[in-house]
Image (cartoon, rainbow, N blue to C red; front, side, top):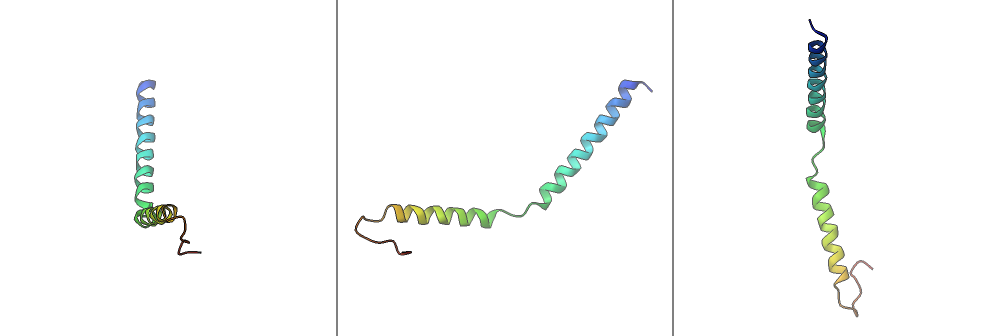
Length: 61
């Protein structure tokens, strides 16, 4: 076997291993739906507090 073809086969095996590791990591990620909803809720709350009339106190204080 030629050295170049051996190196190519080794590289192909490395790429397959990296792809498998990436697939496993992607499957293990926790869902981000709750974090996203919480983040947007906090943004909405901040906008409401920032746009409150000057004479009123925020409900959280």
